[in-house]
Image (cartoon, rainbow, N blue to C red; front, side):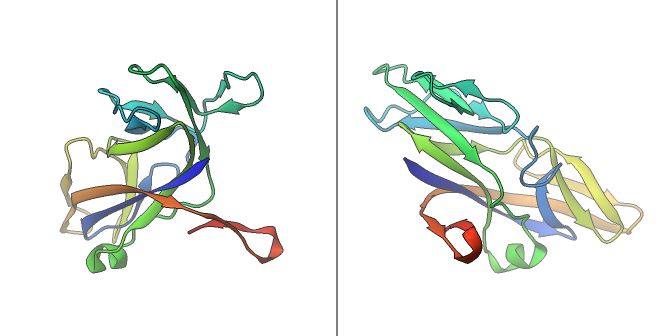
Length: 177
């Protein structure tokens, strides 16, 4: 098993705490990305989706995963299990410094997640309140905050899946770094 953290960054204008609408562990938020077969290296042509609220039985019959899929080229099974509790919103400070925020951990077997696609269902805070249902599918979000009397925006979206290691900390806390 290999653990991948999905990191993301963006340029935020008069916004902070960019994250999925219900928080980083939102069970209804859909993660869309392509998968690469660890056996043959084939990358899926279409993005697949994974969400915390749905799970399917493993081919072995023992347990479940959020995604079970066969490679179209070699036929090998791959699974992805989401590991909630490790994501953070992207703050304005992180955005200004070019830092990334970890969004979700994926326990992958047989597949490697690649090419995350930003979609709708995001939220962020402005000086005048919360912006819900931000759609990032076009690669940006630009509006005018009439209440705060300033432009708001999310541009230059970038994402990266990075291998992380599971570490046990004092008090039984698990972290991925």
